[in-house]
Length: 364
Image 1 (spheres, rainbow, N blue to C red):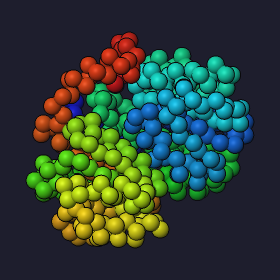
Image 2 (image 1 turned 120 degrees about the vertical axis):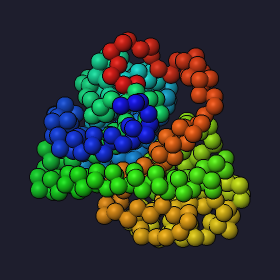
Image 3 (image 1 turned 90 degrees about the vertical axis):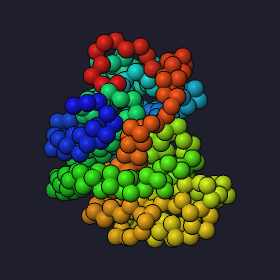
Image 4 (image 1 turned 180 degrees about the vertical axis):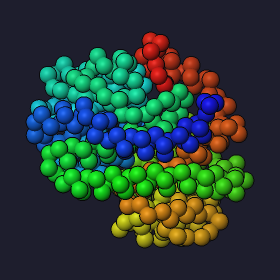
């Protein structure tokens, strides 16, 4: 199969389905490590899409494990964090295992005498030298740097870890854990439908949305704030358009004053207590810009609405709501994308964001 972002997006539901069916085996290394002692909190260190994935999975993990979960950037961990302790379960997250900042941050924690699990798509990468244990989160193959499959499978792995660790530590009864996994499997079937539905929506809105899209603001809430962050990152990376993610209510406390008629605003609406507020925002925002769009799991019609009314809970809606942003990036890139892409590759190499390739890479 030809390497393309779109093809990796198409592969993702089946990869997720496979990972869910093998949840206990896939997460065994990290769950066994977690069960060695009683922890008071979890701290995840990551950057880029891996950071966004951790933000997306955070609330599900907290709810399932009944533990506080903190997500820190690799740079801040390396340069500013000073408080480490043996009651924190440390996780380093990086798909290629080659992020210089993430590996250095992980090494800092290890050098202070604390255990740390590395999660990656390549267990033979440099990351294995900077952690206590290394674990493949089940990405499969993804060779394009604008990751889609990697983000989604990372979110899923962190959730599967939470379920299996909760099962092993009696925070969840086995029947409850199995019920969650069953819901996840149903969600993967919804993902396949959403891919095709979004492609049709994209084609219908190419002229009005995507060719005139210059400055984009994306709002989300709860776990879907991570989706908004990843959506903004993908648009920036692939289309060279300015995009910023905001928590929905925080958008109203300042950033909305930037919303002029030439701005595009995309609102993520998920099931839950904040849904009515998101829909209110969508209805009222046309007073500021005609380029207002709603991605929603409610049944709703409108030229600027992508309605994805599938029966998923709020914490699992992230797997559906990320797809439109991934496809905007993928299909937009196919139509021209970022004309300076090669220049930014050279820039990234000059800034040494990744360690050199060793020839053992299975993906990035």
